[in-house]
Image (cartoon, rainbow, N blue to C red; front, side):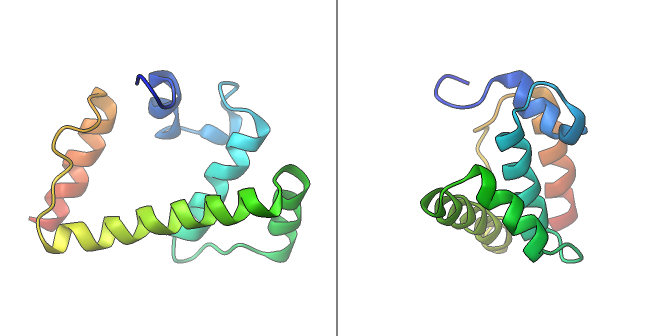
Length: 106
């Protein structure tokens, strides 16, 4: 992945990122924020938000939340119109996970 995360990190996200030494504390917190914003039964509690504020500036938190919200929007919007990923991510484990997700919509 030329301008993004290392392939090992992208594949590791599909596993247990919370205990994976490939991720820094800030990366694990950002991934947990994404989970909490994405999954219906999870919430961004005051306690968790206070943890985030210890490691991210207000500007960084706004940017993280905006990017996560945008990706959540696209994940709901694109399938309605059949917008496919067009091979954007060539990692086999990511392609496999994407194929399973796409099958749910077809």
